[in-house]
Length: 246
Image (cartoon, rainbow, N blue to C red; front, top):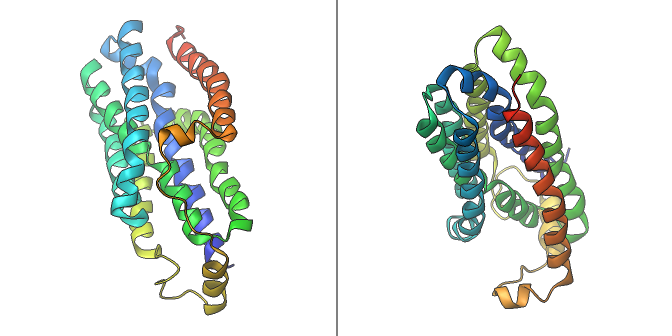
């Protein structure tokens, strides 16, 4: 298998872990809410902390990735959000869970900007849609496997391990990413034919696009409308399921 497709699979794996980490709390919520006396208002505060932090993280993660580079920025983001996931196991009430959700949201926001930039660096323009589709599989896969996986871990071990296990997987991924990911220009084991293919067909990245210019793209408005009509109902139902008495 060509090295660039291994990179795409690696991105799909971390996107899967990303969605598991963010979704676990919703599955264990009935247990921790009962154990620590977290009411609906408290749970709404905790959930809002993650969502607000994720939104802010989207704004700051792009410039940080550009400044630090894809490899280093992605590694730091995964380490921070994996550590935050593991530390959920030490949660003892509203404010401890709120703090961990905020850290998780800030760090997890880097996943898609970093993965998209890795695709731009590693794939010629005519293969990027396929590469993005591969790593985006992780979002659906993570959302699908989280409920049964989390319930099984809770029944076999405890709710704390439902955070510790996926968080640990993220830390392992960060080690592998640090070892395996290099730019095509400097990758030590990349086949020269593949290197030539990537570099010859890699289009120049646009730069200096401001907000006013961005608002002029029909694609931007299409994505914005699509996310508004899909994300709000999904999040509403997700919170509703977690707050309904079991």
